[in-house]
Length: 216
Length: 216
DNA sequence: CGAGAAACTCAACGCATGATGAATTCCACC
DNA sequence: GGTGGAATTCATCATGCGTTGAGTTTCTCG
Image 1 (cartoon, each protein chain N blue to C red):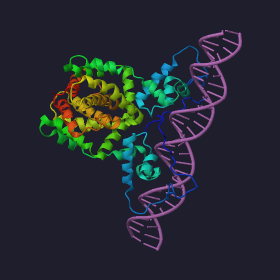
Image 2: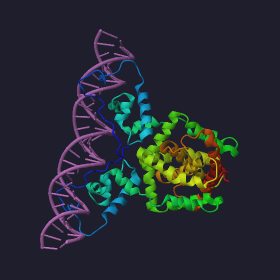
Image 3: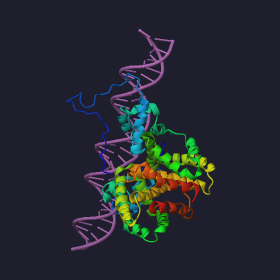
Image 4: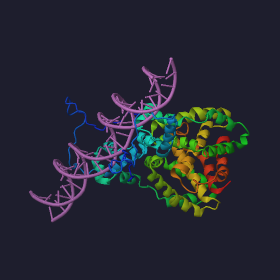
């Protein structure tokens, strides 16, 4: 909304100080085996997390990675595939579910809250989560991806361990609170929630998860 | 992602059956005082709710309203202003907060849950909410709008009535659960949550809101 | 009935975007 | 030490977008 659009062409066309602003890049392979692919993936992750799928442009990602946009296509083919490559899930959900659910059922809520807050302290994991949430909000394919993930990786696995009525519903309520928290803290950025510490949030969240998962 | 892009030009250029597909519209004012402005607003609301701010195009909104895109500019100036006009808040938040908070503090959670679930049964209110959430996810200005709204219309008003520590944090946790629920049910569309009835959800949600707002 | 305003469409502009193909530079291997 | 292939950039295409200005039709009010 009245936003400043980024210029596409980063090259400064002044003839005054030809060497100053942008040292024109040469075509062709670079010397020194830098891991460009990885740099691109990180730039993509950051850009997708910050702006969402549509708004993150190949050119902007390229610029952030110090690379021509065409190189992204060389590596990943299309924007879709770049997105998927950048999102590759870092942790095995099966393991997480098992670890969280194993242990005293009376404190499962605490473990869930602790795990979530812990994950968000890792910048890279937070970026992936935000990229997913932001993209899911406007891109049906991503929403579908998330739907499948929640159902098959979380609900299906958690339900067998849980001994309550409406187990699916309850697991999904947990994830709804997690998604909502991510939105409120990182996307909307409402204070004081956004800056609240783990110590403040844990005692408020844990009982919610506990009750969702094990009943009153 | 590999999505089928809608054609911009809806007019069929075949000379075969000139009258069939798209009866070329005449320029100039239409006969009969139809409330076009309202039709446009409804189409805009639907489009913004379904696709988010960026992806909803003026041309598509125009098409949905049976109107040229230029007319939207005639009425609303810019896309930003159309968005704001389409979103105009339907209920007075001050009233809602007062009504919800007044009454037995021991059942405030129930009233919050009941109100939210009730609002979502009204298609138009649901559309506005979804448009806001979807747009906030990718458009900083809208996120800022929501931030301001939450702070000044909800938190500030609710806090004076509440008698707990960390009142702001608690109100914001309530709204995070509401936003997360909207995402889970309507954006991600995960079952069985998406189709759960009011009767199933109310007893699960009410205690959460109750505890957030009034402590253990 | 006549004039001016309002409603409405058309055609076009300028820009950003995703994608492609050719050209250039460097590395690895024989 | 030369050759093939990988890495990288450049120029370009087609498309969709928001927006504008001019033209046309109808309504309203005197």
